Amino acid sequence: MTNPQSFSPVAAGTRIDALDVLRGFALLGICIVNVEFFNRPVVESGLGMAQGLHGLDWLVAWVVAYFFSGKFWTIFTLLFGMGFALMLERARQAGRSFLPVYLRRIAALLVFGLLHHVFLWSGDILISYAVGALLLLVALFARGRWLLAAILACMALALLPAPWHALATLSMPLGFAGLLALYLRSTPERSMFPLAMIVPGCIILLAALVLLLGRGSGDARLLIVAGAVLIGIGLLAQRYGGSAEARPWRAGVAIFVLTFGLLAAEGGTRYVAPAAGPLTTAAATNAEGTEVDDDTARRLRDRERVQRSREERIVLTSGSYREAVAMRAGHLGERMRDEPGFAVVLTGVFLIGVWCVRSGIVADSGAHRPLLRRLAWIGLPLGIGLGLASSLIATGRPVGVDDQGYDFAHGLLMLGSLPASLGYMALVLLLLGHWPGLTRVLAPFGRMALTNYLVQSLVLSCLFYSYGLGLWGMGRGGQTAVAVALCAAQAAFSGWWLARFQYGPAEWVWRMLTYLELPAWRTTRQQSPAP
Image 1 (cartoon, rainbow, N blue to C red):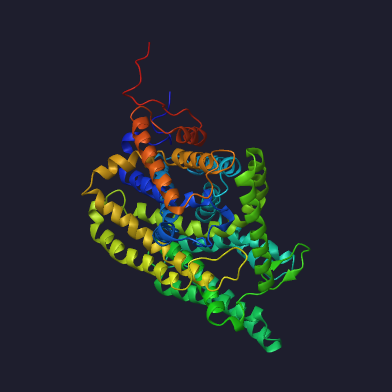
Image 2: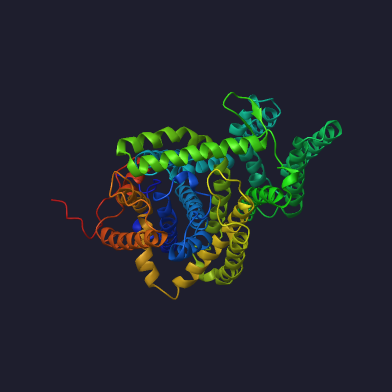
């Protein structure tokens, strides 16, 4: 018999419908964005609108680029953070250990992601969520002395010459987790975080001064920026550290804004004053392990992207399924090397989601309507406005071609994705009180989010790849119509399925692996009495 106090899957009757509605809403937007990259190499994601579009295809691509791209994966990431906070709260209420259960949940998600990447589609987000969730656990639960050691090791490795300083890239997320933990766990009376930012910042600025006096290299420019950012963060944390309840959202917003703000600043520097060169140098090593400057590193990355784009296009339009699987498996190592950097951004968004749950915004949206209105009225114009402003600079970048301002534009677009995502979420929550039909349509779709996400990749790959119907190259208008029709069919099927079963198939497996028990399969109404 199951212990009633055990930490077990949430019962269907105790679910928060608003979260499921938001998941369904996010999944619709994700499908509309993703369908393009079943007709275009995945490696070209992040390069904006494709070249050569006209008429309806151009209009649809423009709407998706500036009203959907970057917004809906951010919403889904916020929801992942909310799910984390809910599980943690349930564990505390039950008096049970949280870490073993959640580690199994992360491991199961990673397996789903790896299988999805290799066998269906290389644009998978589940791997990234698993890595980001692990980093969040480190920041929230790892012992302080180990995190301090990670911070010091990260700083020491960064001072080593190439190729050894490349190890700093791997240790950077741990150093980040250490600093994040220092901020989240500190108290107003005892906070080491400002000091941990200001002292290294001053040391870095001193090193930049030595370099400037010596040879005035580009390394000094990079160090000046890094030192100034660290000192600025420290001073802001000292002045506006906030209560323990506010720190998750403050940290999350700071991480997001710094990441994409620096991306926009670096791209803007090259766009406005190209003669001055990039801020960064010594950014990479070539195949022989020799350190190269940033321009050379950028050319190497572009060359690799061109080669991979060509490979994806050939294999997915004329190759067999076995060849497609082999190609995606071959790209997995490169994908995993890039995950730590993206995990930092995801961790920041997770923290904002954690705050949304702890503040009660989602569970009791009616009591927070003034805040939701402000988020909608400010977040949507600000977020979408930044994207529209970026479109005046550049709307896309062909593979292997100089960015011509697109990196600056992309940084602005991504910078606006967080306020726009919060605005979209607030608008949906506000509408739930007026349009109850949203819950009936979107909640079942969202409850089966993992199953529906995987099925979307299965259906779209069978439609567009050569080992299916081979419809690769369909216009953007047609692609989007397919995505909307698929989501509508999934929403209808999800309602039918959940009227008979407790969970979607993938959700059932995920819960089994998380809690190491067989969850109920059929709904109580459908279960037959025991013989």
